[in-house]
Image (cartoon, rainbow, N blue to C red; front, side, top):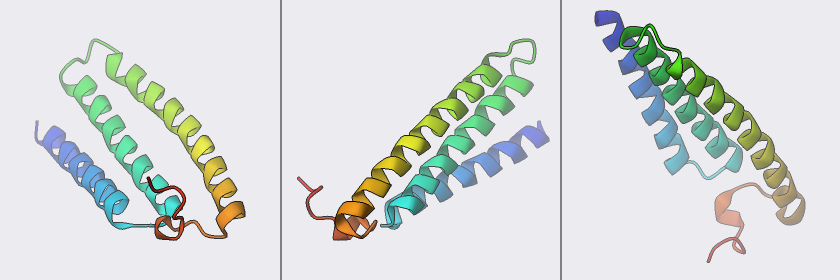
Length: 102
């Protein structure tokens, strides 16, 4: 159980580093990396809970693979959007792009 607590504390720290990075940074690439960090923390949680609580089932591993697939697709779409925004506004900082605000 001590190993489980250690891994969960690392996952907890990883998630909140990603949340802090998302909320404080204004560069869209950095915000995307912060979201990826949070998704990786969730993947670690799924794998740890699957290993230590439900060792006979594979649900946590399947969820982890599904989240990794979704994260790859999300990164590809987000990078395409960021490239188009850079071509139009010559900046990827969120503060410089006024037309995206409501």
